[in-house]
Image (cartoon, helix red, strand yellow):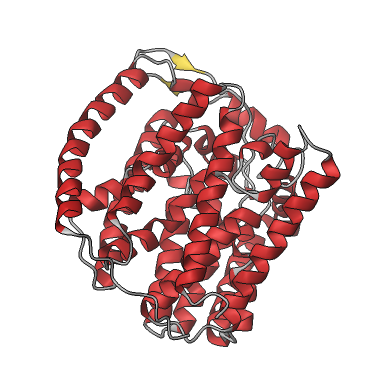
Length: 413
């Protein structure tokens, strides 16, 4: 693939001046927004929502320490441990958990959280947030520098301080780790270090459903060295998990993860995939028609992604960067479990494209300001349906990114 369309974007002087003034206004707006957000959480009003997913991670780490890994995925044990966790709010009150949160990751990934259980739940959550935020900012700078890009610190912050990041931090999610694994996979691939790229890819087995297009793509690409490294990394993760929790523990983890595709998760209509599209359409249209539309969309997107991989050249430079962006944007539309905070994984790729001036500065502003404005407008229009419609908006974002990448890589020419 020669990628003839991958050319830098050159804004005219007037446009550049407008964006410079917008950058100055953004700094002022950011200070006001952070002050307002701090006020809301200091009042204790939203305290119970902090660390929703982190509570599940913390609880299973407690189980591992106190009861052993064999009991890790017992629903009764997880509910019991989580019920004892309350978030100490800034106003002095304690917020009990709002709901039970399942933790489906393989036993080896629980090791991340065991050191945090030596401090109280509230302190552990704030430490986890600080570690994730620091790791994200440091890694984004590293990723751009490794590709030879140039980006001012204010532009890096504009990309980083986005709705997907805030959602990950509030929930206490693990997606910064996955972002680093994906970024290092990309860097190792571009440098020709195929075995290492596969090892980094193994870290993404924390959420294996997001590899459903990448792995077949690499098979079509005949990228055997990367697949060998991935297989080795995956076997190490599996063996360590078996040693920690035994066969029954690993099977329980897989069964729990499979439950996320079924009735265990009630937020299907709010996701950013074709599954959510079908669930929303079937409330106003016949179910058979809604699912036909969704399945056709999934098949078309998956087929086009695999077509790109089939005709792609070896992993080099910007072409590979765009191919991975298109692949994961497409993945988020077809994988069965796809919340909008997974968009964090695309952040290094978009940042690098901006640093190379391949995309317009308008992308940065759309990424940063678009989601909160969209949700605000949807909430004003219909508070009950706002989350569902917002998910459809994020589905549209993924389809836009995939279509852009597909066209830049030559499309069907």
